[in-house]
Image 1 (cartoon, rainbow, N blue to C red):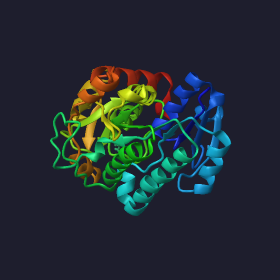
Image 2 (image 1 turned 135 degrees about the horizontal axis):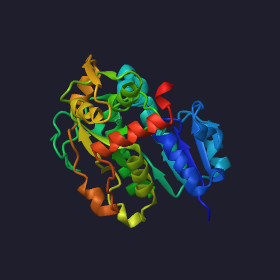
Image 3 (image 1 turned 90 degrees about the vertical axis):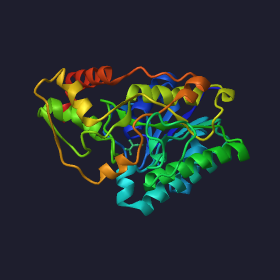
Length: 319
Ligand code: SER
């Protein structure tokens, strides 16, 4: 049977690039992108798009009934910084949205669902270097709390109802085709656009804030690989650690200066520093490597060269 793919929260940073890849793999006619509003990106002009709010059960029933998706990617959520501004809504969207979509997946017989977790499940008491798969999980942001609860919920729905759910803990994601919105790691995308446009950037995280990061191409590939792996390879039904590379703003600036020698980095620290300080420096992803063959392609230098080259050639920094 041909697959029918439904992506919720499709217009975000991950969704935009994921939908583009899914259209290539399954054909645009078999991919339905949905979000609370349509973005300008060409990806959504060329394929199926519908307005869908994951808090609206009637809209969900209508969409699942109409399309009968076989694979669902549920990406609708508030990220860390935005959720801190409105914790009650952060909880509501991230949790009730997940409850609604998981129930619809069971009711409409969806074969597989992908649900994204984050390095935000870790907190100040977690070992920060090469953070293990199973470790202390005491997040102190509302976003991290929803991601941890969501992971537990994934495992529960798999064990109790047999929902074939797959998940990875995304690090900060860095791509040139889409912009992040409301995250703590957003500086690591913005810095490339500003470096090309103005030659300078003001970072809201301090120079030594090392965080796990990943090129979007790796992240999309990880998402597709974990979702399409044979079920018996997915031994963890909570969420897998995956790692790409790790760096701090100063190290990123040094790598950018290899291409733009006069690039300057300044600092104006804001409340996102507290969030970043609670997250690990680097991730041990050996379980994902063993279970389903995860392997990253981008380390810092390659990531920087790729970002600068693509932003420049698409003139994205002028926008
Ligand atoms: N990049 C995300 C954020 O900063 C982490 O999941 O919120």
